[in-house]
Length: 304
Figure 1 (cartoon, helix red, strand yellow):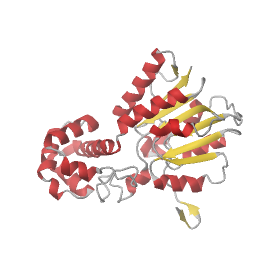
Figure 2 (figure 1 turned 120 degrees about the vertical axis):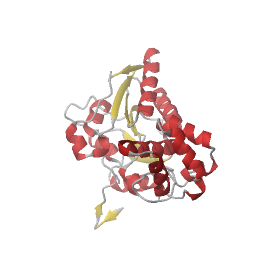
Figure 3 (figure 1 turned 60 degrees about the horizontal axis):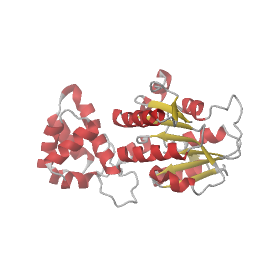
Figure 4 (figure 1 turned 90 degrees about the vertical axis):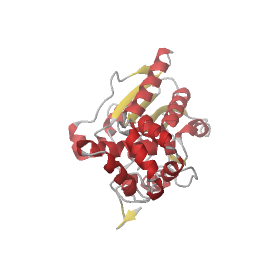
């Protein structure tokens, strides 16, 4: 993960200042001090958010979690000088198992930055992007022998493919695309093969949106993302100490809808105070500097 002895940029974290503002409300221009506090970055990625948290606390610990071994190795190197940083290669659905390993600490904050990183998108062997030719994998954890995107395409019926594209991609041309995918599935081996199928069905100004939605739908199903968000976020809320903060960044309406509903349900049961009536969007200057932030929606809540 180094080039000329310098850390290669892995991924630019989104809305870092806003994350810190909501996750660590007691900073007030000085490092927040709480020896018993534990903060979890449930989607570690390149470690940018974890680094920001570490730089703004003087006591306590930060725990980073990720399914992607590339992210684990990168962040381990990036944050190696922080003795109060702990890292786990697992899913955030296992939050309870991780928290149980630190019985002397109270969980005071959890961050979920959902979606995929620019590093994952750019690597051909990951298969996340229709703009980069590679194998149709789409697994976050490539060490896990779960089915990949190619398996789903090869083994699903036309009806099942149509439902996948509509349910997880909200794709308006789902039926026609599914028909073509099913008819030509034996010839679909790479991301470009799949993209060409979509382009044969959708034309004009809709093509890029359809491509994004088709790839999104398969990625979500491969990684069981929506169910995992429900499990992970619910566990995080239950595990948090009173007064703890939860911050969630989503990148599409399906995830945002789930987060909004979970926050609302807990708030109605007097277990959460919602801090963001509407999701916070990144500033234009950040979008210009970091295009991956353009679809980000941030929601925050506090345990009561």
